[in-house]
Amino acid sequence: MWQKIKLIFTDPDLRKKIFFILGILAVFRVGAAIPIPGVDHGRLEAFFSGNQFFGLLNIFSGGAMENLSIMMLGVGPYITASIIMQLLTMIFPRLKEMYQEEGEAGRQKVNQYSRLATVPLAALQGFALMSLLKGQGVLGDLSFFDQVTNIIIITAGSILLMWLGELMSEYGIGNGVSILIFAGIIAGVPQSLGQTIFASDIYQLPIILGFAVAAVLVVSAVVVITEGQRPVPISYARRIRGSRMYGGVSTYLPLKVNQAGVIPIIFALSILLFPQMIVNFLAGANNPVVQTLAAAVLNFLNSPWVYAALYFILVFLFTYFYTAVTFDPDAISSNLQKSGAFVPGIRPGKPTSEFLYKILNRITLIGALFLGVIAVLPLAMRAITGLVTLTIGGTALLIVVSVVLETIKQVEAQIVMRSYE
Image 1 (tube, rainbow, N blue to C red):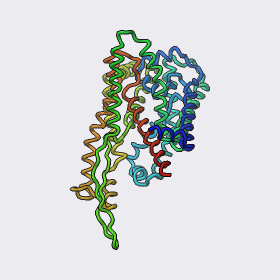
Image 2: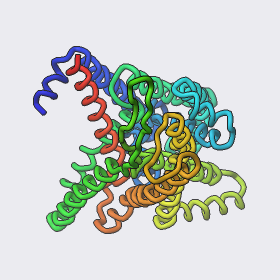
Image 3: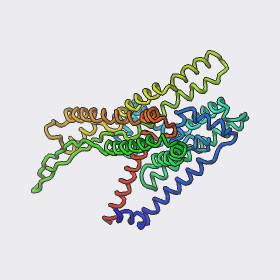
Image 4: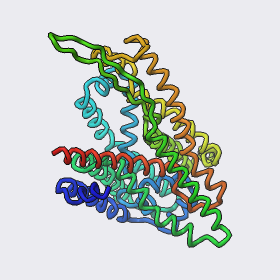
C-alpha cells in the first residue's frame, strides 16, 4: 500500500493529474464564495433553514447556492440535460442506436447534445430561481438589466463548471462531474459537524455517538452493495483452425447489484426540483385563486412523508430505467453468440437474453430498494435523532463512497499500467 502511495507522488504523470484536479477544485471553491449582487443574506439564511429541499440542494452545490454565488446552480443543468437525453434515447430509436451501438463515437455525439441543451436549461433554472428568491424577499428590488445580468452570470457559472468537469475527466482521474459533486458535499461536512458537536448539550452525546455508529454501518452497506455483483458463467466453444485449437475457455459476465450507481438519486433530485420551483413561482402571482392553489400544493410537497414517498418512488423507478438504458440483454446475447460464447445450460440467442433479463430484474430489485432506502435515510435520521444539523445523509454518503471507490480504481489502474511499463 505504501509503495502505491509513494508511486502516486513520485510518478510525474500521476502527480500532474492529481494537482490538476486539486487546482480545478480550488477554482470551484473560489467561485462558490463569490455572490451575485443584491442579496439579503439574513433572509437568505432563513429561507434555506426553513426549506429542507433547497437545503439538500445546497449540499450538492457545496454551499454555492446558500451564498447565491455565481456557481449556485452547480452541475445541475448539465445533469438535467443528461436526463432529458437519456429519456429521448428510449423514445427515438435513432438516438438509442447511436448511444448503444455506435460505441464511443455515438456516446460522444449524445454528450455533445447534452452540452448544447445545458445552456438554455441553465438560463431557465437561473430565471426560475431568481424569481423565487425575489418573491421571498431574498433579492432586493433589482432593475431589469440587473436581473438579466444575474441570469447571464449564473448561466456562465454553470457552463464553466460543466467545462471544468469535462477537463477533469479528460486530463485528470475519474469522472469530473462526479468529483465536483463530491467536493461540494465534502465542503459542507466541517460546518455540519461543528454545529452538531458544539451546539449540542451533554444529553445529546449518546445520540451523536449512535449516529456515528449508524454512519459506519451505512458506509459498510454502501460499499457492499456498490461492489456486489452476480457473476454469470460464460464458456467459449472450441474451434479448430488448421492444427490449432482455439476457445474452450471459461469466464464470467459480472452483473452488478447496483448497475445504475448514483445516477437514479441525482435524476430523482433533479426531477423533484421543478414542481417546487414552479409552485413557489406561482405563489407570488397576483391572482388569489392561483396563490391559494399554489400554497396548498406547496404545503403538500413540503410534507416530510409526501417528500419521502415521492423521493423513494422516483429513485426506485429511475434505477430500473437507467439500468434498462445502459444494459441491453438482447445486445449482450447477440454479441456472445457472434463470438462463439454461451451460458452453460442455456441455448444461445433469445433464451440467453431472457435468462440475463430475469437475473438483471432480480438483482436490480435489491439495488433499487437499497437506493430508495438510502435516499430517504436523512429524513428518518432527523426524525429519530432530532438533530437538524445532520444534513449529510444517505444520499450524499452514497455519492461520496461511490466516487471514492471509482477514483481508487482509476488510480490503481494507472499504477498497474505504470508497473507494467
